[in-house]
Image (cartoon, rainbow, N blue to C red):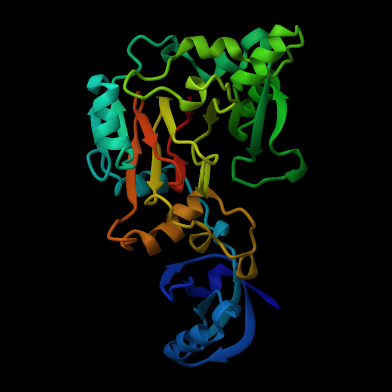
Length: 346
């Protein structure tokens, strides 16, 4: 197999399971078959099914060829391209926006009962967490607290896969940021485990139970059914993210609906209708270099292919979450997130 240099391509057309082609550039591996007619190449690609990930055209010869694998993450993102992505996500576009004081009963009857994602505005007025900063959080107890951290270089390259998702001292993460690393912290506040350790005098540097007193469940969010049954869970997190980080399409823990309050920055969200299977809308390892697609690549290359598709008459929701917004997502609603700015949320 030869590696195709993107500088030699007029364009690269990516083929998904729906036989939809989209233009993009990137490094890919090609099958050694050359065609003079691009339409013949397209038909050949469709006939090859999963053996064809896309087609490429040579800038030098005008001939086209079949691509066996495509690396979508070769396309780099910067603040300009992130802002361009955000242009299509209008504040008052697809998502319902309602005041936080709507009341739990009204919110349940109007939104939760219909599995309708929505944003509550104005829930953080008296939160101490409004005063959080990334530096201040990472400096708690002189930077000796542990934070579950993923990191990459400024260019987005993950240089040490084995070290991803491990606990790191806050002062170490601050040093990474000083060296222009890109970070994404998704750290469990883990109320159940933290309380148990506190009661048994076995607390660890990962415990941050005190941060839960800096915010509260928004008034309109109904009571947690686990808690009403006397069951504590570890389903509480704090997220700290650099710009141009996020997640590709995924589901939250089973049997849970989620709320997410953004305390700084802006996030792009895509939310699927409830109970739609996410695997067919993710990269197939048989024709992709990467096991986990970067969030910006998902938004740039996968989203355009599904933005107008309908499931049972419903389309995807796409919107921007702003500082102070509390997002409600029903159980089994797949979603993808991209941080436009440096953000932190609970």
